[in-house]
Image (cartoon, rainbow, N blue to C red; front, side):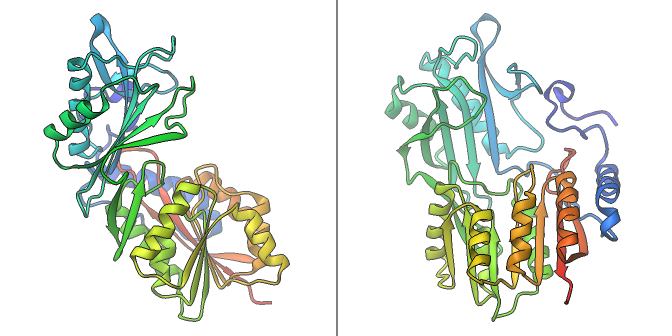
Length: 381
């Protein structure tokens, strides 16, 4: 199949774009079966009905090209060279248009992109987040300095795109590949957007994690909640809770929920989300999840259900030992990396848990990534 994208080979973002979508799903199913099949039967993967323009978060890098032309796009894999991208098949189309406008405004305001070789220039990246249910739009200008006419630039951007509800300036002067810096300044609006998912409303700030595919995220979270079989008497722990998405959805069914997250900005959003959703049976802690569980076990604490959704690197043996010490009867493990998930399951099974269900979900069409929900239950002593 001929790829539909002119920069498919150079970009490297959509590794499977030369395969039709049913073939992609089959390839991902085989991969999950190869990695997780030894723990039990793998359910058929849940694909997406319309697998295009699903990304609600779009990041563009900026560079000066030949003849001083300003380019925006993505870094070629393993390099700091920008591959120019004006429209992407998986990005939110509105985000791509906003990035194009920023590129034009740089020219008209005579601003230069940041150069990683010299450390000179103004703009490094633009991050656009959109709430698909609310249509609220955040634009984050990631800059190396504050030397630009912020008020006029923001006004020109909003004149071209009145749908933008907030603009944030993020300062990152470090010569590093890390995208966002520590300092932020709100140039317009509240400094965050909101979105709705599974009957809850969520506040999302520039640094907060939120699933990039809200359509499939609803499928994923509903599967996770079905696996958990939560009752009104249950104590639920949402480890790696982020802005509290899973925990707040679970709170509708549970007796009490504890969310644990070490990202301070995300915890701030989670607390605001609990208040907005009138959830009085949930509390959020800014803490290391492993240390929290170890302390809970040492105090004789117990949980009935535990959700865990760690980063791509997976969890740790120490965390999983702490999970077993707390002793939830069900563990729902959500992962975007079946390789590290397989490793973690191999650590958790000898601690008294067995795999009951393995459900892949295609959260990232046209890429090699695949999300999996695994239900584990504690063996009765």
